[in-house]
Length: 284
Image (tube, rainbow, N blue to C red; front, side, top):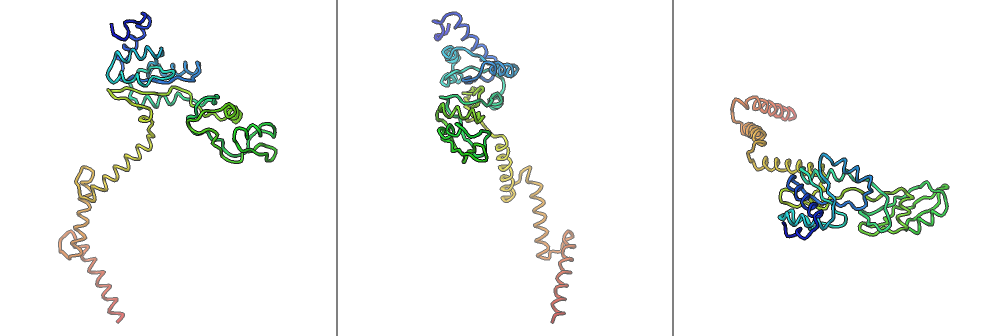
């Protein structure tokens, strides 16, 4: 029996063995944070993930035991356990998993004491509130408000909570009244272990369109460099030959080299020059 679990009760050893068994059956094992997810939403998420992934919820200590017994790069995943962590097992790659998990998130109202995931901004403009105590409540929350045309109006855009700061009760109450839902509630990927490498959310949060645009730009720049440096590749061979033919033809015409392929251009050139000469002599 493994060193980490030989002192554990049977039900705990069974949990550890279940984790190890799942880990052997998939190509990716990861940790997700379930903090703040309502029970109904969590059940829906589990149903949505049923065919794509297995979500395993158990005590963090048992997860740590199992991961350490597996060892290697998977063992390093234990260093990311925090809060309400759960294991996720899947055969997809980490980028696809990250996108799937992002789709599980919904916007929720902020609760006092929660940490702002981004700057929370109250935008300027009219509200649906009639004049009354709400004006003082807005001002106490640091939001500039005034009365205009019988309605409460917010004078300027205001960052009421900066990213990483704690949301106070006053601000949370006002955000609810303004129907501002700044919290993303859903499974948050903490780390994924795939093919011996660890992937964190900052590595996986890729804007695909920006990535495609960068590849397109790089390809265009590489093509232009190859053309300017006359580097023959599968992509540049045809345009380089076409360019060489054009340059050779232009050189032959300028140097009056009598070749079959440029005779029409030479005759046209001679004709234009004769017309120009005729015009000069007639002026005299």
